[in-house]
Structure formats: structure tokens, C-alpha cells
Length: 263
Image 1: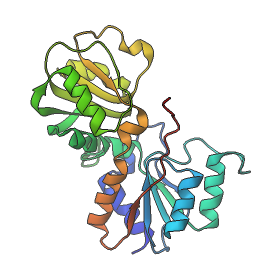
Image 2: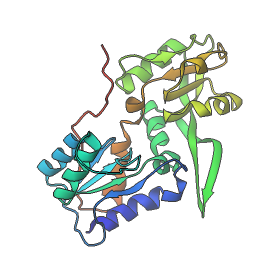
Image 3: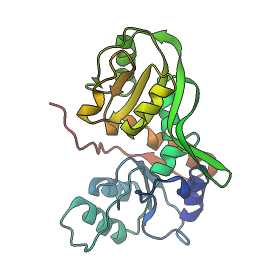
Image 4: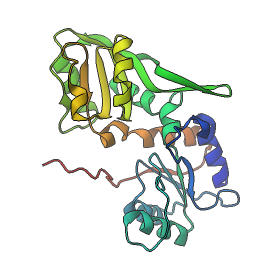
């Protein structure tokens, strides 16, 4: 099976036109048409260490969530980690493909995986939807807990499921948490939509300070960290590839690429 077939399988699940206008999902480095896939390394971020891991595992394909080339490169001199990762990938004939906001917005995508980890029932899109051909997508997902929980118990559950050292939350909600809205990564733009749809809690990866104000006893905000909210995306890639491309060896990265250190 060649790399193009794997890429096609990922893009059938999350078509590139679903990505946001600011994004740069899709092929980042390398060739897809003729190369046979020797193995796929799946990750959240592509760093030089991740490329080293791909080389060590004999993988000539890296599938990441965050694009390696998010900003244009005017020169490649090896002065930073992105440039070194590009150079090393080219040197070792490794193709890098990123499935970013198209995978966030896809049915069954990143936010559905987050909902699955929390055990939410009947997850569905919320917020502004977009349609590409016959494919619908949206940036948020909402579902319900099996049983109502106190805000304190809900936050403890989220903390445990996502291995979070610290959750940033607003004032603890005094009513039970049942309906939960989700947006992995930087999802503050969906807070008002979550409130409008009657969510008891909103879980996302990051928010600005002033965005916490004014929602006391309106909704339970739970900000768990960008990396933590999207860390299971690699599992989603693995499920897609193993289902659609049987026989392709898939590896979840062993490199923790979270740049934030908690002290």
C-alpha cells in the first residue's frame, strides 16, 4: 500500500475543505504518489525528536494533528526545531501529513474522541456548521453524562480521564452537570454557543483571562490545556488507518511534545 492510499483514507474521513481559513492541513513534506508506506507514526505535533522516532521505528509516514508548516518558511537553515524537522524528514524520505481543523470539524473527529473519553452519550455537533459537498462539520460537540454529577466530581473526572495536573475553572456550578459542550484546543469562541444551547459545562483547551468573567452559575468552564485536550487524536488516526488500510503498521508517538511545564 502506498502513502497516497493512507492519506486518501484520512481525507475521506476529514476532507481538507472542512479546515478553517487560517489553517494549513494536508501534505507538509515529501511524496505520496509512489512511496510504499513502511509504517505510520502518529502524533499531535511534529518535532525533530518525533522525526528521529520515525526513523528509529522504520516509519516513512508521520501523521500529525498540528501542521508542521503552520507559518511560511522563507529559508531553511536549521536554526529552529521546525526547520530541523523539515530537513531531517526530507533527508530520510519521510512524508509528513497533518489533519488539523478538518479533523476537529469532522463527524467522529477530535471532539467526538474527547466526548468518548468522558463517556458522553449521543454526541452531536453544536455551533456554526459548515457543509462541504455531502459532508457536514462543526467545531463543537455536545453530549450528556450518563448521570448528573456535581461540578466538583465532574472536574475531578475530567482531570483523571485526561491526566491533567490542573484545571482552570470559574466559580463552581451549584447545580448538577449533565449536558457538556466540548471544543478541543483553543475553543473560547464557542463559549456563547455552548451557553445558548443550555450546556451545564464547557470543556476546552485554552481561554483568555477575561473570557472567564460574567459566567458565574451560568456554565461550568473547564480549561484543561491545549495538549491535554487533543492528546488522543493519535488514537483516532490509528483507528482510521487500521480500519481503512489494513496491514499498515501504526505507532503512537512516545514523545511528549507538550511545551508547557507544570511546576
